[in-house]
Every structure is written in C-alpha cells, then in structure tokens.
Image (cartoon, rainbow, N blue to C red; front, side, top):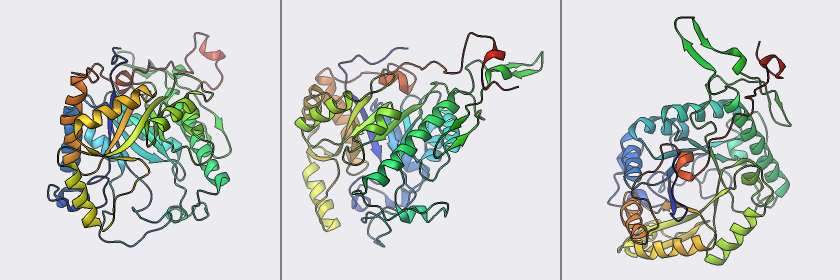
Length: 402
C-alpha cells in the first residue's frame, strides 16, 4: 500500500448544504433550486476529487439546523433540512473513484449494528474509501423524535451528562469495530462446484455487553475492504474529558484551534493521551473564504444575513497563497491535516481545489496525483488485522458460529 510522503499536507472539505455561511444559499453564484438534488452533491464532490483532496465529510443531525442550542428557531431565511448523510455518500460512491467519503452518523439514538452495516456497505460500494464521522445527539428536541429515552435540555455546563453521551459513543464505535471484524477476510468461499458460499468457521459472534448495548453479532455484511473504515470525531476539547472520545475510538480527530499557539497546545495534548494502536491523525478545522474577492463576498453574505459570521472554528478570509502559508505554519506546530469548511459553494470549494492546492504544490506540500486506492492508504494508516482471526483450530475459538 503506497502512501503520501510525510511532508505533504492532508486536505479535506466539510460539506454542508450551500456552505457554512448561513446566507450562502442566497449567493448569486449558487442555484438554490439544486440544493436537494443529487446533481448538486455530485458536482461538489467531483470537484473535490478533481482537486485530489483526501476526503469529504457530510454533515447530518437528527434535528433541523437552528441558531438555538436546543430546539428549532423557526427562522425561514436560512437553509433548513438535509439528506441522510450515509445514504447520500452511498449514492456518491459510484460517481467517484479515489476520494474518501465520510458521512456523519449519530450514536445517541441509532443502533450501532445499523450504523456499522451502513458504513461497511459504503466501504464495499466505494471499494475502500469509507469513513464514519461519529456524533452524539444530546438535544432534548432530537430525543423527542424517537420516544425511547428522555434527555434534559442540552447544557454544555452539565459535563456529566455530555460525558455519558461521549462514553456511549465510544461503546457504539467499539461494537461497530467488532462487527466489521466478525467476518474474517476469507470467510466468503463462493465455490459453485462444491456449493459452499461461506466458511462458517470464519464468522464470529462478538458478544458485546455494556451499559448501553448488548450485541451478539455477527455482521450481515462481509468485512469491509479496508478491514476497518476510518472513524473520525470532532472534539473542541471544552466539554467532558478533552479529546477522550477520539483517543479511545477514532483514527482521525478534528480540532478547532484559532491560532498557531493553540494548534501546538492541542496537538501536544492529543498526543499525550493514552491510546492503543496507530497515533491519531490530527486535522484542524477552518471556515474559509478563499480568493482575491474573498473579503467582498464574505461582507456581502454578512449583510444578507444581518450579522457578522461567527463560528466555533477559525474564520479565514484571504487569498490561496495566504491560506497556504497559514496551513504550513500550523503544520509546523503539529497539525497533520486540515478539514476546510467552505463559506459558500461552489466558489470556496474551487478556491480550495484549484487555488489552495496549487499554492501548496508550489511549496512542495501537496500531492500531484492520488498515491493510494483506499482512504486508509491516503492517510498513511495500515489495514488492521482481524481481531478474531487465529491460527488455532476453529473449535477452540470462543464465540465461533456452529
């Protein structure tokens, strides 16, 4: 498996409707009638692949977008509504060939068996380019859609409640990982002559029992091409135990520093956490307006929105060369990759895929072609061994299917 040289910057784009500015759908360059169409998403993801980006993430949640922390705000001047991210990624997979696809799926009200099969299926149909952005759903208004548990009104000051949701998410990921391993790589025989389709000795119960889930397994989907699809987590470090969920459960962590010193401090904090397996890949999130006209475009959108844009991530407004300099500066501080949130599409996606990548390439810091066929390969992560595969006789293995 070839991988990108370590001096190259990893780049990803976070996709959310018309862009991350709440007035982006009103930009004259955007066709709002296309937002809820496959054509819109196909064009944007194809552009990201044309720019040789590592992956795209797709936002999702169980509630409508809102300016309130918990509950709808009843505004009609901003985009409301989304596609299901996992289903959308599966539709985009056959339209792309090399870029990674990481949809968001929440854990709080979703059975991990269901999510695991969806992501495994995505990995099969994309031939090894799938990931899962794990997200909790802590809002009382979202719990009301399901009626299976009651949650208090979300308050990030209630660290115990939020940490419990994070711990539940870690268990959900562990269930998914075990399910992905419950079929050994060569469990499928498909021998027409003998009539044997599978080797039942190579399918395994996972027998997971925890505070939130009791899952027997095995999976209904064969082991994914990557063995384990990429798991990613956004963690601001300010709620619960900082970065504990990604350290326990993820391959990639998205962080939100606002300057170089914060970037260095966060990178050091993440790397100091106890962890099993490969080190976490640290990606910084930035909300970006890229191009010579970036400041003018952002000011026009702020005027349409009636307020200056604010964000949990640093907001960058400037040229591709200025953004390239910032990213390389933060890379020296310990950040390996960047997940860029385009302020408006298509302008800022093209600013990334055509302007920024060219600026980085001039500095010898971005790829000229895809160097791997899988998302793990692009990120320089090895394909994990199957935890249930063993050289001992199958009858000696606990949890073997009979």
